[in-house]
Amino acid sequence: MEQFIHNFFNVDIMWRSRIILLTGLKNTMLLAAVSLILATAFGLFLAVIRSVNLKLVNFLIVVYVDVFRALPTIVLFMVVYYMLPYLGLSLPVFWAAVTALTINGAAYFEEIFRAGIEAVDRGQWEAAHSLGLNFVQTMRHVILPQVIRIVLPPATGNSLELVKTTVLASVISMPDLLYKAQQAAGGIFANSTPLVTAALIFLVMFWPLVRLTGYLERRFGG
Amino acid sequence: MRIGDLVRTFFDGQRMLAVLPELLHGLLVTVEIAGLSLMLGVLLGLVLAVLRVTISRPKNPPLVRMLNLPLVFYVDAFRAIPPLVILVVVYFALPYLGIFLPRFWSAVLVFVLVLTAFAEEIFRAGIESVNPGQMEAARSLGLTFIQTMVYVIVPQAFRFVIPPLTSRLIAIAKDVSLASVIGVSDLLKAAKIDIARSGNYSALTAAAILFTLLFLPFIRLSGLAERRLR
Image 1 (cartoon, chains in turn cyan, blue):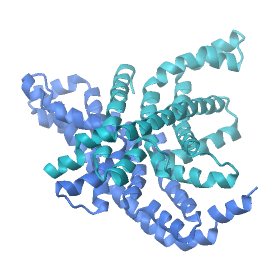
Image 2 (image 1 turned 180 degrees about the vertical axis):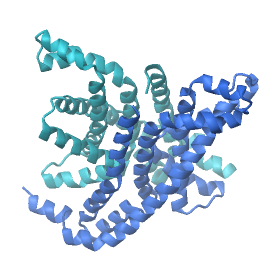
Image 3 (image 1 turned 180 degrees about the horizontal axis):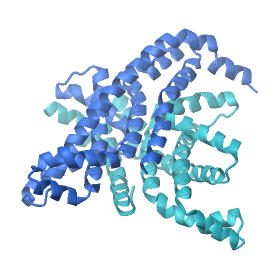
Image 4 (image 1 turned 90 degrees about the vertical axis):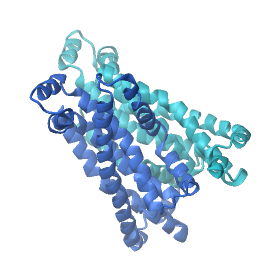
């Protein structure tokens, strides 16, 4: 038991690894923020394009959405990381991670926004059309404001999934919180405490989001 | 442009065919871990949900209802911490607790723990969505609380549970590929071994295709189920 505490809840090592872990935490937060914004924007863009109802375009969007919801995210991270240089794009590892998270997250956000757009009554389109609004105006001033209320619970849940997925960046050696914790636990301190500390930091960071998602689902229906 | 290099490095058909047996062997391991974790996780999640609802009945004294607190903490923690982090911590921690599990079973343990937490929440929400009149009617017919749960409430809860549970099951099954990080010889690990051996990434492409073929039908099915039940 003593050995267990020494190895996993070592307060001294927790304190000494704080700088390393905070550097990782900063990168994790930056990665989460940038990817979340890009994935939401791209997902919304795809959903709006899909609502135009062009057969070929919609087919391509469905293929994109289904394939990237089927492919495990860790595989996508590796493919993006290894393949981009061959496509003439030598991105820093941070942007490779952003690319993978955006491709993956947008597929889920597209489905959420599409369901939201479809849930708005058809009559709203007809009313807006008869008032002389064009497609873009209708979307922007009539449909999307109603969509936001509908998609709030699933979009929050998906945002939580996305920020949790940022830890996969450690697999392509982006120095996020998990990567830094593994570094500290391995070579630097030869002690598992930094890993446990990282897990606790993730818990404190994401717990409010878990609660918020549950609250929104109960409040507005899942 | 390095399109030639790209094709040779990622889409070498001969290389893909050569590693296919190893990849399929890895795929089998992936399916085994996923199958075991899903069955156990759903079962335990359902049991915990019924337990939590039973403990939190209003007629129980507050001290009894407090028994739910550790349960709530477990469920929230395992939904908040990324599965990869749990996997790595459990893998390193178990030996210090005197538990020596093969990697395969460490992975199963982690995915069961994670899925149980999610399934508990989903089943509990489903149980709470069933009209309270059902409970009252069944109890007034003389059924005990547990009988009512098993024969009346849970069967009706399944209707609410299927869409969120299906998408969570798919998510966990996809997460099984994370097990390669702790060295489980799954499909992704088989691909990594071939990359290290040959310096060619075609095995990764082949693995990506196999994963997509494995999960695509379930993605389509879950969309179908969702539209039906809406």
